[in-house]
Image 1 (tube, rainbow, N blue to C red):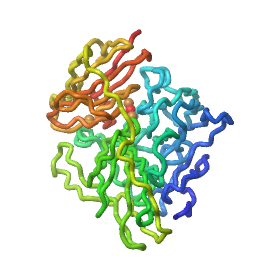
Image 2: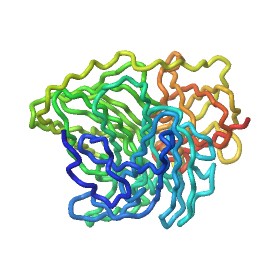
Image 3: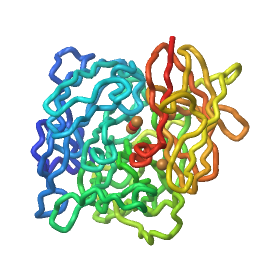
Image 4: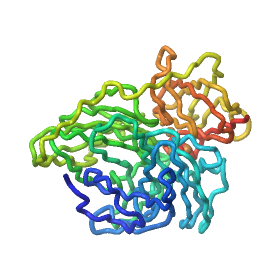
Length: 451
Ligand code: C2O
Ligand code: CU
C-alpha cells in the first residue's frame, strides 16, 4: 500500500494524517486535549505560499498553512474546541457546514461579529452526528473559499459496520491560477457572476491530478466533500461502478450502485469502490461536465481528477457490504408548518421570494416541524443549503426519503420539498445557494427561530 511517500507540499503546522489516505496526503489537526472526548485545536487563517502547479508558488489563503485546512477527526458526541485566529488582512468567520450546533457557534455574520484581522474566536460545540462535514468562512466566502479556506471534519461512529473499506478522505475543489502561479484576480465578469466562477485547476486534497494507491479487489471507502465555491463535480471512474452508502448526514439505509456521482458545492458522499484491473494499470477518475443550465455554451471537456494506480497486493478478503447500513426514521409531516420559497432571477438580480420581513427574514419556532417547498424559476440549477439542521427530502408523493441532507440540488424549473424538525436551538439560521457568488448577490435568506 502506498505510504505517505511525498511529504506535505506546504508548510503546515499539522502532522500528516495517520490514515494512509490512499497516498493522497491530508494534514490532520493536532489534538491538544488529552481528554479522548474533546478535540481541541488551533486554527489560523493566513496567507501562505503553496505549490499547486510544479515549480511555481501560489500565494493562497490557508488554514494552518495548508490547502485544504487540517482534517479534524472526532467521534460522534465529542466536543470540538477550535481556537481560531484570523491572520488574514480582512475579516472572516468559520462556519461548520452541516453540524447541528448552537447558533452562536455557527460562524456567520448573523450569529457573531466577524473576526477582525489579528482577532480570535473560540468555537466550542459538540458533534452529534457521524458523517463528513466541513468548515469554511462565511464572510466574503466566494473569495475566501476560492482562495483556499476550507477543510473537512470526519465524525466517526464506532458502532458503524466495520471493514467497509480502506478509508480515503477526498476534499474536492478547484483554484484559479494564472501562468505565473498567482491566483487570478476575482474578475467582475457578469457571465462568471451569473454562473459562478470556477477555477482552472481541479484539486483533490490540494493537489492537481494526484495518484491514488489501490489494489485489485481491496475495497476503498471514499469520504468526499465538494468544497469548490461554484463547481459541480460529476464523477465517473472508468470501468467501475460506485456504491454510495452515505451522504451529508452520515450513512443511508442501504447501498445504492451507480456509474456516476454528482456532488454540488457543499455536498458530501460516502462511496465504496472495489478496484479491478491488472496490477500496474491506471484508472482515471473523470470530472464530467454537468449541465446546470448553461448547456454546451462553455464548451467544457471531461477532465481527470485523479489516477487510481493499481498495485499488486496480498489477496484481499473483504467482507460483503451489509445490505442494511442504518435505520433512519422518517419525520412526520403531519401538522407541519408549510412554507413556499422561490429562487428567481429577474434579468439583473437573484432573489429568494416568499421570505417575509426585512433582510428576507423567516420567523419560526423551536420545537416545530416544517415542510419547505423551494421552487426554482431561474434557468440554472442551484445547490440549496440550510444551516444548523438536517432535513429529509420528500419524494414526488410527499413521503420523506430516508436520508439526512443539508445541501440539495435545486434543478432549474423544478421544486424540492423537504421536512425539517427544529429542535431547541433558537437563533438566526441562514439558508442559501451554495454557489457562493450567488449567495452574495441575493440567493440568501434567514430563518429566525424563537423559543
Ligand atoms: Cu457551507 Cu452557509 O454554508
Ligand atoms: Cu446558485
